[in-house]
Amino acid sequence: MPIDEKNFTKYINRHEIDASIQALANRLNTDYEGKPVVLVGVLKGAVVFMADLVRHLKLDVEVEFVRLSSYGKARTSSGTVTIIKDIQADIRGKHVLIIEEIIDSGRTLKFLYDRLQASSPASVEIVTLLDKASKRVVEVPVKYVGRTIDDQFLVGYGLDLEEYSRNLPDIYYLKYPN
Ligand code: IMP
Ligand code: MG
Image (cartoon, rainbow, N blue to C red; front, side, top):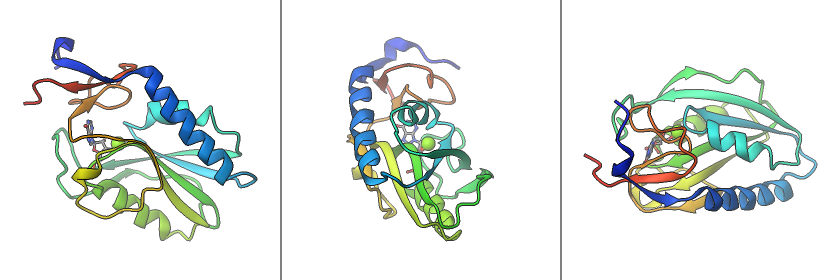
């Protein structure tokens, strides 16, 4: 069921999102200057972030996606991660950037990070727009963070509640999360 927008409170507006993305892109453009990179977006949530970030990158980029499942429709991680859709590119010897919109427990990214490392890339780093750092259960090396946030359930800008609200241009938290 789509939720009533009066239960949302705006938390990060589109201009703040843009500023975070520009700052991330500046770092990436410097750090990867002259190096082709493979961006691996984590479906579905990272699609909106990936689309905006990629347009700020002045690098030779390949765009790939994975789809992982750990949550289903639950709001907290179940701890078990499976691959639903894998990348198509051969990443051996390439610089890989995992693109995620939010990290919570870290379970999803730890799984993906280890799996990509097993294919012998030149490097793998994680880029996330949002980091709920206080919620980390599994240690995962996150080099590029747009913004560290409190533990709140967020929707909009790719983030969903039971598949709805990904299309909102700003990020909201739920006033009544349960
Ligand atoms: P982790 O494995 O616990 O780090 O969970 C990461 C995934 O959970 C993210 O890629 C999101 O898809 C989802 N997620 C975590 N926090 C939120 C939230 O506040 N709103 C919507 N989805 C979230
Ligand atoms: Mg995600």
